[in-house]
Length: 121
Image 1 (cartoon, rainbow, N blue to C red):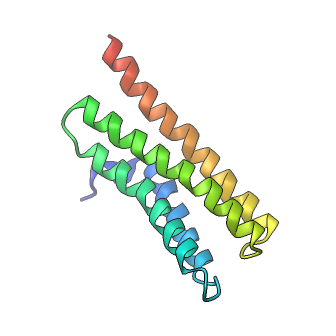
Image 2: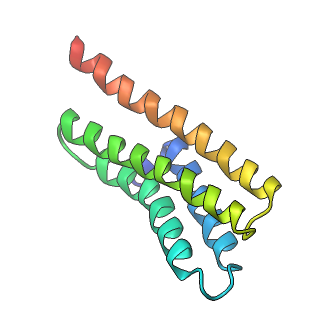
């Protein structure tokens, strides 16, 4: 039996993104622990906050966790940029990861707007 949030495509994409980040950062050389750790934490926080928000009882609580998830998603952007500038990831990988973030961002915005629409009725 699956939890309800596991059926959400945005959740699935967020978990896949976090997994790809774990795979990518595992190749970072010593001395970049701070960047590896922060990127792993931010990427995992996207999916974790979607799951936690979906388990909340009020619309306001759900919306708040989805907003936090969106913030974590945005946190990944400068971290990926720094990884690219430090030549820890190449341009192609950077662009692929950013595309995944853009997709997740649009889906999170849709979740948030859906809650707002239901609140205004």
